[in-house]
Each structure stands twice: as structure tokens, then as C-alpha cells.
Image 1 (cartoon, rainbow, N blue to C red):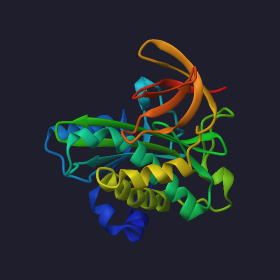
Image 2: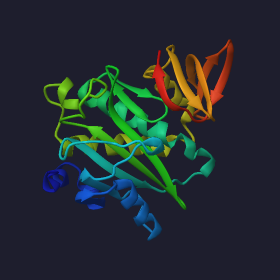
Image 3: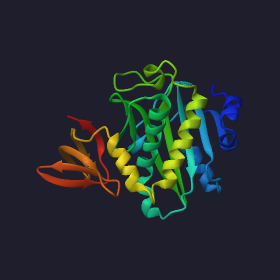
Image 4: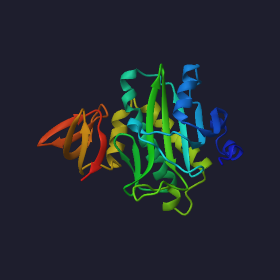
Length: 246
């Protein structure tokens, strides 16, 4: 179980904003409910276990109780909603940066909302909005991961991957920094995303707007879109389902 007292010693300011639950259907759903009730900016909803955790486009997010960090950050941007489409990438950049700098892990950002280590999924991100709020849902495999060769946890790759309390503190600090910067400093963020982009230069296939596509991933646009070389032409996509490397 998450040790709230330990977290309070590590990150006293975040501890004041934390709402810890042993079990919830979904931390994002709880955070969205708080937003409707006028939730406070930078409130963090954390659950040891989710009964109906979900990822992008309704995909389930599975995690054994106590093996990961399942949390949602209520964020009230002070910039125009035109920039909100950058939030998932900014959050992914924050997670990858924390894992690289604090634990020297080769974390990479997979457009639009995953963080991979050595090609395996360690973190998923789901951004949802409610009125003037954005809810940044993050699931990270810390001490364990779902069965299957496509997943990995922090602890599997480093002798000391940090406690869940330490990881949460680092992630919140790094993610918030990137969220606040993605309106005015997105070009700098794109440069760093490019350096740690898992898909760049790879052949990929995916579905977008009801059509199947295949091509080479070229990068991310200034609007945060996926840029792919398709049949000799550079095409930008704002959304894509289940991107696979080929």
C-alpha cells in the first residue's frame, strides 16, 4: 500500500494536494467528478487499485494492486485551449525525463501518449477535459507489470528503481514543469521529444479516420501531430489508432 507518511516526508507540498484511495473504478473519473464540483488546481487523485482503469480510446489499463502508480493530476492551464492538444505529449516528456535523469533508464516517448523502456511499455497517459480543467491520468509500472513481453516495470531494469512514493514525487515535479511550458516553449519540448522518440525513422502501420496507413514516421509537427511519409508524401495525423512498428 502507498505510504502516505513517507510521501509527506519526501514531498510535503504534493502531500497536501493528494487524495489517496485504496480502490477506485478510475482515478480519472474521480478527478473529473472533482472538477465538476470546482476541484482545486493541482489536486492529485491516487489509487492503489483501479477496477475500471482505462487508456486511450477505451483500452483497459491493468495493474496489480500496489505494483504501479495509478494517479490523475487536475491541471487548470493558464493558456488558451488551442494548446491543450499538446498536454499528452508534454506529460509523456515529463515522465521520460524523470526516468532518464533520476534512474538512468533509456525511456522513450511513443506518440501520442506512451512511455517505453527498451521497446516495452512502462507508462500510459490519458488526458481528459472538464470545463476549464484538464485531467492528466498516468499509469506507471513501478515494481511489477502486466503479463506479456510488451510490458516492463522500473524495478525490472534497475536494482534500485525507487519506492512508489519517490517515483510519484519525481513524476509530479517533472510532468507539471512540462505541462506549464507546453504553450510557450513547445519548440524546445519538440526538440527533446525528437531526441527520445521511439517511433522516429521506423516503419509503422496504423488506422486514422477509418483508413489504414503504412509509412515511415518522420517526427512530430509544431501542432503535436504525427508526421508520416506515406507513398512518398509527408502527411500529418492528429489521431491514430494502435500504432505498430513493422
